[in-house]
Image (cartoon, rainbow, N blue to C red; front, side):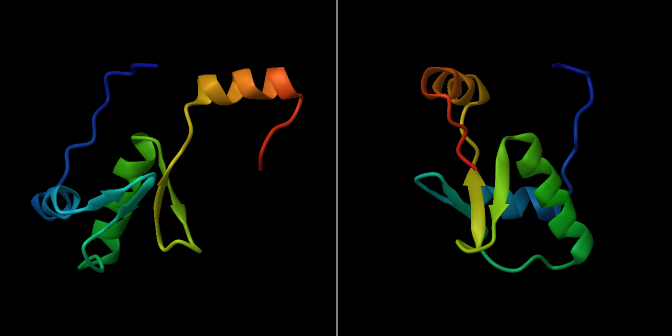
Length: 81
């Protein structure tokens, strides 16, 4: 749903995201955030784009397409957790 709201990134957060590395469905940030506020800004932006923090992988993981996930749940009767 389009709400007309946008998140304008700070220069530091923008630079961090520009240097992030995507490997398959994982996104790794180049290093620790310089501040707690910067980390929360980056996390908020990535979550809005469909990424979630995966603690064991120590990276952000791309979430599956919700429409495809629903189709698979309807076809199989199972929902992966």
